[in-house]
Image (cartoon, rainbow, N blue to C red; front, side, top):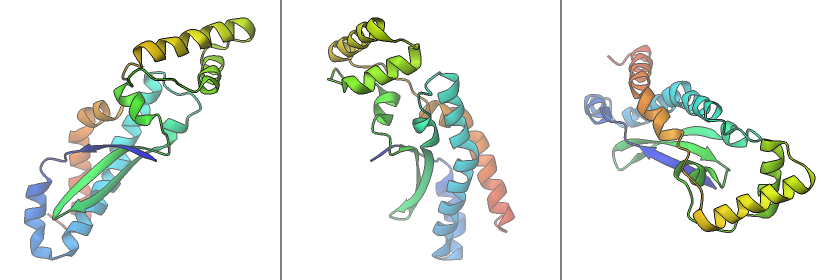
Length: 167
């Protein structure tokens, strides 16, 4: 399952208008270069946010960050986010009250807090009760990384397009 956040890459409408003279290949080129630029600039920024925010558990969420580009109609688009991590969206946006799997919470408490025995059980039960009553708070990584790196993304995109002979 993929948990993506779609970002609006402003300015690409102007770029695509200029490239339309190249025919059908222009969209493929824009999509390819968008993805390359996002992987070079935005994905590492998301990963750094995850590390800085202390959200690395086993590293699966950290390693699952990707960027995918495509075309809707005649407009290029890009999505960034986690693939294969069911809790990715809940981590980014928070989650309403629900009943989490006790084994997952117990593993998280043991790993994050280093607890064992009766203390592990007590804290696990407390965390589960809290999630059942209040849900979880959002811990955004993707959008803050995008917002603070979009200028770098655009610069990277333009440089890559120029390397391909598009001025």
